[in-house]
Length: 143
Image (cartoon, rainbow, N blue to C red; front, top):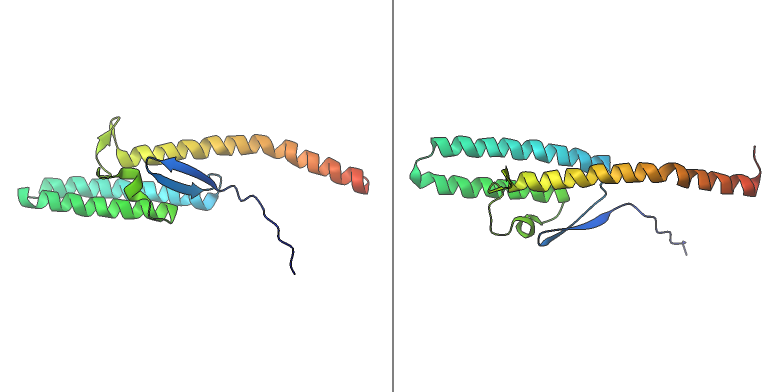
């Protein structure tokens, strides 16, 4: 029978409004998805503006619903989970709060968490590595 090892992967749970999301905020794969999501959402926001300017009164609401649906899919892709409805509820992703679209507030909050976690993990790396090296050297001799 194989031994079982459980290793901390750094994945943490976060509650964003009514959604639980999971990610390792120091993972470059997640960071790349985050940046790509920002770019996609910005493009969709611009598409939204263009469609609203070009739409007649009957098509405006349809365009809003379609873009909101696209934006929610992009957020779900970021977390590889169906969480957008929990994050945004019944409010559109591009509604404004604190002077920005809600989707932008979500992305910025995650970026802030990524930055803070990277700083904290870097501070923990050297002492932990030095402790393991000292333990190994003490046990096996310094060579």
